[in-house]
Image 1 (cartoon, rainbow, N blue to C red):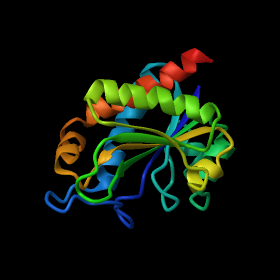
Image 2 (image 1 turned 30 degrees about the vertical axis):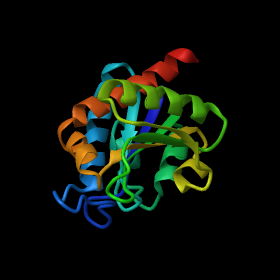
Image 3 (image 1 turned 90 degrees about the vertical axis):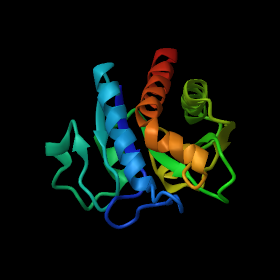
Image 4 (image 1 turned 120 degrees about the vertical axis):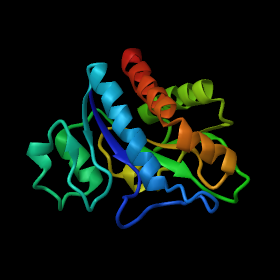
Length: 188
């Protein structure tokens, strides 16, 4: 299975949400977790490509093929590469008290199935509040990908308890996301 991993935002231009107390940045957490997800999926036999932002060249398997194609957007790169699955990794933020995990998908499709597998793995592994799987067809990374696609909101970075998990349990999040992908693959 070819898995495209998209860590949300980017470290240089758009850090995403930031915890107001610790300064923990979404882009950093997403990049760290994505790197680990790629490691675990590669060990499980998946072919992976990772690209954090439309501003950056992709990394991982296939880099030489796409390294000079910085003009491609994340979704164009995933589509051109022929990914079977697209996983965008993010941290949620709202009002400093909201907490938990949710996975978003385009609609009632294979993305919905993949989302459930990942959601269940994260909630079971980390004990986060299960905020459910949500249909979000307006999200560009879901709308413009040709393959099964999800956006994982691991936890709320502006909630101090969730931020502690995001800072100190990145390997656990990565393992759970990777297991969700392989659970999906085995269900096909």
